[in-house]
Amino acid sequence: MSDEQDIILADLSDEELTLQMHDDLYDGMKEEIEEGVNILLGRGWMPYDVLTKALVEGMRIVGIDFRDGILFVPEVLLAANAMKGGMAILKPLLAETGAPRLGNMLIGTVKGDIHDIGKNLVTMMMEGAGFEVKDLGINNPVENYVQELEDGEYDILGMSALLTTTMPYMKVVIDTMVEKGMRDDYVVLVGGAPLNEEFGKAIGADAYCRDAAVAVETAKEFMAKKHNQLSM
Amino acid sequence: MHSDDYLTDVGIVNSMPKIDKVLIIACGALAREIIDLIKLNNWQHMDLTCLPAKYHLYPEKITGAVELAVKKHSSNYKSIFIAYADCGTGGLLEKKCKELGVKMIKGPHCYSFFEGNDKFTQNAENEITAFYLTDFLVNQFDAFVWKPMGLDKHPDLIDMYFGNYTKLVYQAQTENNKLDQKAYEISKKMNLPLEKRFTGYGDLKIALLNV
Image 1 (cartoon, each protein chain N blue to C red):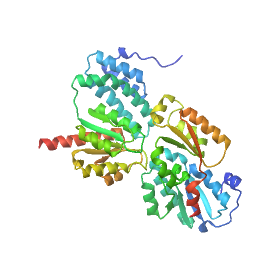
Image 2 (cartoon, rainbow over the protein chains, first blue to last red):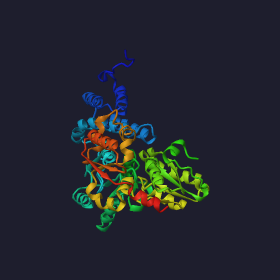
Image 3 (spheres, each protein chain N blue to C red):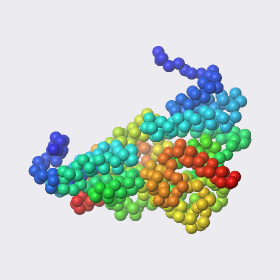
Image 4 (tube, helix red, strand yellow):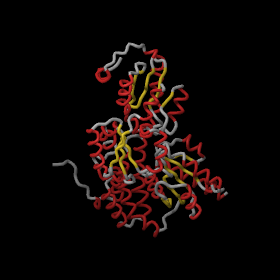
């Protein structure tokens, strides 16, 4: 007989359930997360509160343990997958209930690169933090970025690359933005396994982000600065 | 002092003093190939030491580990050569090698120099959806790829990892039926069509010839 007892999520208090959802996210339990989200919504929670207090806070813990080498990529992916399940329920409700928006981000993996795990994590965490994110997907030539920046209303451009051979393409995009006189209109964040802070500075990005959690914090800081400048 | 395994494989009792030799500090994933080349070419002026191949899972560890190894051995050898390409260090290894006064293999990674850096670069645009395997990776696939990615426990993650790939390219350094069979099994596991290319040692041989 197992020592573990099945936990009935619906029997837990709000506080207990929130903490349990942090644990379930940590363990990548998608169905439990979806159930938890529905229970909290059923108890009258605002979608934004479910998102921030249950999901984002849970992913923040996952991010810390990933950074500290306690969790590894597979566990983070499972947690992300669980969060994705919760987000799918919340996303339409967030729009309806006028949840606060911190800013708009355009994100994509650069030309020649098909890797998107990191980019997808950043997208999800940014959305969770209150950013509207348009994902251009993988293998994006400079034209894709420029066209979308011109067509949309963005505050932040995020570029991702996993390969040593593709990361220099980020400079092509930034240089093109400079040529077109649009570079200073955006915060440019870059990330990916072979990148480092020095590289980010060398290509003219505003910041290199080591992981998704850092990307969110960095984006928030830049947006706060922007708002402060506008209010002066 | 060479290990028993080395002597079993290479069978050379090399009396040349270390101080007259070149030390190859290599990625463990290249050990077999470098030992073969040393043996085939009777390069008695070379010694080999390897860093763990698993550093490739954490490329940020490579530069520091190479630096430590160079500092540890540099006073004992005539010169040192680093048998790594950039290998995901984002240029940091190259920078460190320049600083330490040691040379390294050109190119982004072993898939490139085994195929030949020039050829690999030419084909790069058409092959961005290829996942590459070498002899080492075929042999060590489970330990080096499948398990560290958690796919042994969570096979449902496979699309998140490999969903954007369209083919598996096995760059064979040697002709070996067992490895061919294993590569085929891996392609089934990854659900990707397999293409085998015999590359031999490619630019690795050229790099070591010039040491």
